[in-house]
Each structure stands twice: as structure tokens, then as C-alpha cells.
Image (tube, rainbow, N blue to C red; front, side, top):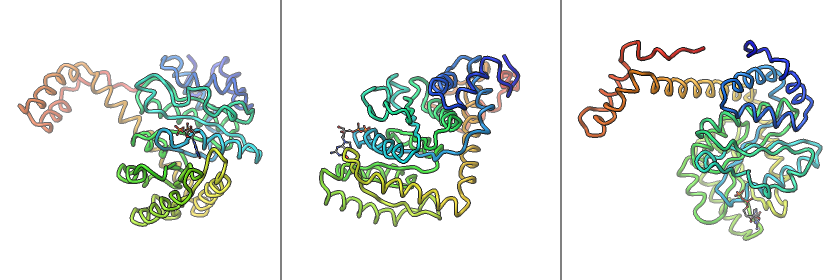
Length: 338
Ligand code: GDP
């Protein structure tokens, strides 16, 4: 294994390939970061360290919405629109269901067929194993690789279950919520706190019932006035679109650019990304500490007994937590950070 931060000979070619924007090298690099093998992980971290200085230049767009809202149709229309403007687009996914089913929202090859065949696009399904946190972490790293490969727009798609939206909003510059004008969709999103994460809200499928879309958009605008905006420099607009007819796509992208301009003018983008990077670090520390704590020998044994005691009401959660945390130092022997 190479020393930290110094890529081995074999990975030099991979790094050069990614930097040259070669799709095969990028795909291989992402496979390396998704691997759970410790030697692959070490190489992946070296790779990322080498590529990090070449990251940061893309517009990072998060897109979320319930299944069937039209995410892939919208992303395809958007991607083709951007490519026509001379940009190149990478699409990644954080799929909470893939970690359970082993499937992937982007696994189906028929999705975004036209975009996937375009030489200026790169589409990568969600990693199909691991916890949501793990999947999100890999996607975050894949996003950096796409930037190093020269993509100027990176779209991260997720299907809504609350936590995955938070993860995607935490790795992108602008977070977009796709909505439908029916089915109490907006109410659900407001209740789950997803609307508060959104920088832009788009009512899709406006071709089906345009007046209903206008009404839903107006109601959403009213609802937004009662919520605290995520940024004091930006009031989230509510737009409408028809992904299948490619309507509202150009206006949507203008909103993305206006959002970027507002962040730039306020000098907020670097601060936002710094905050996201630190949050990411702390999430990794929290989850790392938690799993090492649970796996340490003394804790592993005591936890069974104390879990039962809390469940039966024989002890309080506070007392049990304190006992576990106070276990003698040898219980933490494997808390080594090497
Ligand atoms: P996803 O599950 O959110 O990715 O949704 P899809 O993009 O797969 O779309 C689900 C279905 O809605 C497909 O049959 C699409 O053709 C259809 N659809 C998507 N966008 C629109 C739209 O703007 N108008 C209409 N009428 N149908 C749409």
C-alpha cells in the first residue's frame, strides 16, 4: 500500500484518465471508491486526495421527489438542454431503497435513454449495497470525481424518504424538489420538512392539468411565506414544468443560475461548501465512533444485557447509557485511529 496521499504507480494512470475526462477511468475510479475492501478503500482515499485540488468547479444540483413525479424524465430533459448549451452533465443517485433491495433507481437502463447515449453525459446508478449513510458517502465522493473529470454540472438524484433528501441537500449547492399538483403531495412534503430544504420547487407534469398546476403552485407560494427560508439571500421560487414536453426546463435552469448568482453575490457558496465538508467529517466521526464503540469487547457483551434491561423497564435509558459509556478503558481498546 502506498503512503497516505501518495498514489501508487497503477493509480497514476487512473488519476490521469479521470483528469482527462475519460469515462472509463471515471467509472473505474467510482467503482474503487464504492469497494468495501480495505486495500481498495486506502487506494480510493489516495486517489481522492490527489484529485481534490481539481474539484469544486461544478454546479452541484440535488433533485428529489416521490417515485413517479418525473425525476428521470426531468433530468433527461434538463441534461439534454444543458448539453445543447455546450455543457457536460454527470448524474449520480442516492437511493435509499437500493441499500435494502440491492436494486437501484438508476439501475434500469431504459431510464434516461437519450441522455445516457450522449457523449457529454455520464450517468451512474446508486451504489447497491451499504446503509443510506454509506451510499450517501460514496455518492459524495463520486461527485468530487465527476468534478475532477471536468463535468460542469453534477446532478444528484434521490427518491424521497426524508433522510436521503437531507443527505443530498448536504452535498449540493442547490436543492430542488419536484412536486405533483395532486394527491396532497405538497402537504406531505411540508409535513416531512422537505420543503424547508428546497431552494427551488417545481410542479412537474403541468401538461396534464395546467390550471391545477397553477393553483398548487400558488398554494405552495403561500405555504412558503410561513416557512423560514433556508438562506436569507434567496427566496425559493415555485415553478412549473413538463418534463416530457421539455417545457419550463430553460426557465428552471435560469433559476439555478439566479440562485448561484445570489450565493456568489453574498459570498455564501464557499461558506456553504465548507459547512457541508465539516458536517460530512462529523457525520463520519459520529458513525465511526458509534460502530467502534458497539464492537468493542466490553461493550458488545454488556449491551445485550442492558438493552434487555431498558426494554423491560428494569433500568432507565440514561442509566444504561451511562454505564456503557463508563465501561473501563480496556473496553475501548479497539478505538484506535490508524
Ligand atoms: P421518477 O420515478 O420520478 O423518475 O419518474 P419518471 O421520470 O420515471 O416518470 C414517471 C412517469 O411519468 C413516466 O411514465 C413518465 O413518462 C411520466 N412523466 C414524467 N414527466 C412527465 C410530464 O411532464 N408530463 C407527463 N404527462 N408525464 C410525465
